[in-house]
Structure formats: structure tokens, C-alpha cells
Length: 456
Image 1 (tube, rainbow, N blue to C red):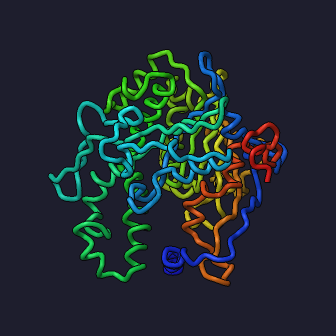
Image 2 (tube, one colour):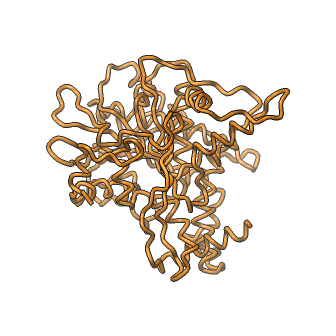
Image 3 (cartoon, rainbow, N blue to C red):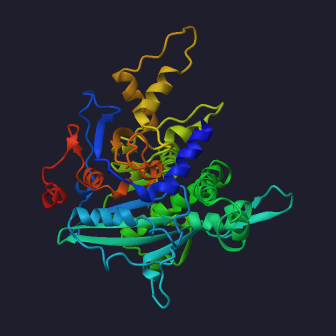
């Protein structure tokens, strides 16, 4: 079986250019964890999350965008979040040309450009983080954690989207992963060795392992703590920027501790935040949020999460939760009557090898839990579903999707698994659901500007 999966990825990588008979976008089901009426869940959508604040003329939604596995700074690939930003723009019939600004966070910066106002680096603190390695006494050091930039997309006189993109892969690749597996990838001095492989085996190892699984392996170890600290700091820094304490005022570098202390101890008012995550980014964001809503402290992170929607593209919660098995009790969310429970909207392509829908995962886990003095399964009823949501601190909605195209002409039974995992934001219909939301299990077309401009 494992060999067949590898073969499938090989075919996907090698033959993706041969796609034929495109698959028509399809939503097989929309399922809510807590909805008492099965099949009729709802979520608001980015456009309806946008809100006004005093002194601002436009409705605005701040979007925290977190990528997943893979080296997103590959100069041969599209810039991070390009599909997402252009997908929003296309939904409103506008061009992004001239609106997306290059930043030092990516490889698209042009010499002589001044982008100091739209980026910031988050650091571990006054002293770098030091890791011991497989060789006793040989250490690796992290002096920066993430780079974050800001992209503003003007829709019209009354609506704008502000996207905070989080670049964590390049820093962690250079500091931690490259010393471990960089001697093997198809770039620089290691190319001579990598070229000994067959073309598609070489490409597969880079895409799947060197730039892929190594991210998850690293995150599930001690370095994961630093990644979570980085995301906390980036969230606090983004909240400050959105409230008017701009990146320039915060400095080119800010520690995650300083950013969060400043944001928590300062009266800030910003438009609603929403979160868009991909792949491994879904697990990272979930872990950060779960820690925040179970730690017993009321911080700026709790304010950002409250009432928000978290759109997870190709989530890996079920798969990576295997690493969360513990002998100690798990903390339960602490209900706060002043805050609205956030909602996770998981968009999962059924042909993605790495994604598992969330609500079926909860059902399976609940029914197979150990119950003393009985061999009967736990009953997964409405009360159980509500209890799960209460204990975890989130509502959950699953969208079961299909859009990946066949990669071998005339072979409809095998579609591109990489497209299924990576290209959600390139699907116009999916973007419409993300923008307009769902009401009673159907696309909400009432009062949604994106739907008005694209009635098809």
C-alpha cells in the first residue's frame, strides 16, 4: 500500500501537466458538529465578518494567513498566498495588478524598493533559541522565527480585505531543516548528488519529504514550541498594526513576548480577524488557539479568536493529533460569557491523501473511547456533539469537496492528489463559499457583493 501511495505521488508530480477532462467543482455535503438539524449548518463568510469601527469609513476584515508544509519560497513557484489573494480579487471582478506589494518576506523583492512599512520579523526574545543536535555539542540557533507582511485588497468604497501573510518556512528551513536534509535537495551544491536520481524520484523526494514531511516532523518535536510562539507573536503584532500601531512603530524586529505584552496591555480596537490556514498550518493555528482558550488568562489572543471563523484548507487535525496522545488529562475550554465561540470551517477535497474531515474524526474518537465496566460504544448523539464542541471551545463545519482533475488522459479514476491538497484557493466556487458563507447548508447569496458581481 505504501508503495502504491508513492507511485501515485510520482504520477501526480510527473504527469500533472497532462491533465484532461477537468472535474466539475462539487460539494458533496456540509456538516456541522453542533447543528441540531443535520445538513443545515451555517457560517458567516469573510465578507459578512467585515465590520466597521469608529473613525473608519470602510468595512474591513483582517485575515491571518498561515501556510502549511512545503517550501513556499521556491522562486519557481507562485508567491505565498497568490492564489488566495487573486481568488478574492476575481470574485469581485477586480485586478490585483499593482495591489499586491512585494516584501522582504518573500523572494519577489526588487532591488531599491522600500517595503519597510509592510513587514516585520518576530524573534524569540533578547537571546536566540539554541537547540542541541544529533551530534553532542553541535548546536543550531534560531535568532528569528517568522516574517510577516501585510497586503491590502481594496474592493470598493465600502469594503477592503487586509491579509497578514506569515512566512515561517524559509527561516526554519535555513536554520534547522537545511542542516539536516539540505545535503540532499535539488539545489545548490547538493544538486550534483541529487541529479544521480531519476528525474521524478528526485522531484518527489524534494516535494514530499525534504520540503514536505520534514516540516511536520520538525513541528511535532521541540521546535514546534518555537513555531507556536512565533504565531502568537505574529497574531499580536498583526492586531497592533490593524489597530494603528503600525509595523514601523513596532520596529523591524519584535520579540513575541514584547508584541503580546504590548497588545494585551494597550487599549486597541481593530476590525474583526479571520484565519485562513493550509495543511500543517491548520494544526499549528489550532494548537495556538486551543492553548489560548484553555490557559485561564484573558489576553489579546482571546479577543482575536472570539467570534472568528477559521477556514482550514486541507486540514491535518486528525492525522497529527496522533502526536497529542498523552497520559495526562487534556484541558477543557473555559467558557467566557463575554466571548463568542469561534467556528472552524474545514474544506476538504475527498481525494487528498493527507486530509481527514473533522466531524467524522470526532465521531470515531468518541464512539471508540474507553468506557469502564462496559463494552458498549459511547453514544454519539446531539448531546455528545454539543459536549465535544464545549470541551474543545470551537464549533466545527465540514465541507466535503471534489475538484481535483484527472492527470492521465482517459483515466477518470485517478485524480491529482497534489492539486487536491494544495489548490483549494484556485477554485472560484470554493472562494465564493468562503466569501459569502453558508446559510441552511447552501451558499448564502443574500446581500453578498461577490455573489452579486458573479451571479453564475
